[in-house]
Amino acid sequence: GEEQEVAKKEFIETLKLLEGQLGDKSYFGGDKFGYVDISLIPFYGRFKAVEIFGNIDIESECPKFIVWAKRCMKIESVFKSLPDQDKLYEFIVEMRKKLGIE
Image (cartoon, one colour):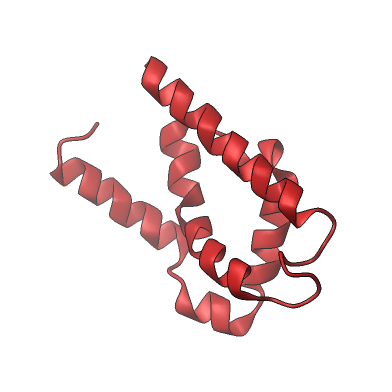
């Protein structure tokens, strides 16, 4: 409904704000993966679920943010410590079923 549309708009606006801070840099702090990157990259794992359940195309709305996230996911310590997007999506689907959401 209307609340979901407002939330989607706010979510995209927040990502665009982050894109603005990222600019043309590889990482938020410049050329090296740093604290801001460490704090933000875990949210990327939820993007598949957000896109499907929220009917949002994050990559078309915020392409620089997705390029940054994919760059971060190439770092061994990052991809080894974060859950697989597909598995996380499946978990969210199951939790929604158990909670009676959709």
